[in-house]
Length: 235
Ligand SMILES: Nc1ncnc2c1ncn2[C@@H]1O[C@H](COP(=O)(O)OP(=O)(O)OP(=O)(O)O)[C@@H](O)[C@H]1O
Image (spheres, rainbow, N blue to C red):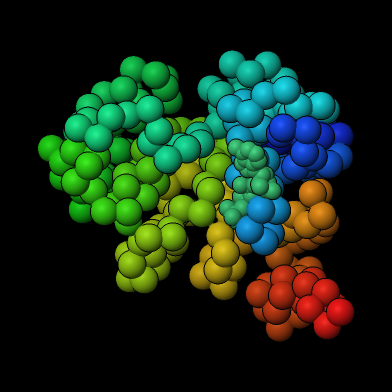
């Protein structure tokens, strides 16, 4: 099958510091993939490079065979913290903006997601709690009919009950052929969703395995992941 995402020999520096070093990553359509790694491992940076927000990297990123930034942006949904909107912006105005910018934004889907998340369209961004903001970001992201969804620690502030409901529903919100790359510090909570696991360590892709393969050899994905760091702690 042709790759949906192909990252080839990617090196990214910020202020002369190497943040990603020779990253290669290929993802196929229709997969849910965890992006794991310690604080500072480069998960957010990798998503920013893939999405075209971070520039001046070496190597190449292609989505559906195209390296063009405009093509990539049209095919992927990445909501980076609602930056750029003022605090007094209402949810309904953010939705209006999304509708104007993204051709694949589906208002009916957003409406369903908004109700699911129990968000009031009249509320201003300044009135939203951290968890409510994260719910809005998830709703905006999945209201698009994208080929690739990048979710960067999407649930940090969301309460346990809502989190469970969201995680169980994610698979229903995406087209069968769409791929999700999701970073989360609690791999256990998303484990049942996963088809593949990518671990960023030492500035590069340290491991990329199928979830089934990991489960065949380890008690859980979490145990496998923690095992990658055990030797270091003993030193
Ligand atoms: N604006 C910036 N300027 C300089 N260095 C940065 C900047 N943003 C991030 N970095 C550095 O890039 C590296 C990777 O950061 P990144 O945010 O991508 O990691 P992460 O894996 O997403 O971490 P976390 O799990 O804490 O969210 C870190 O060493 C960090 O110090």
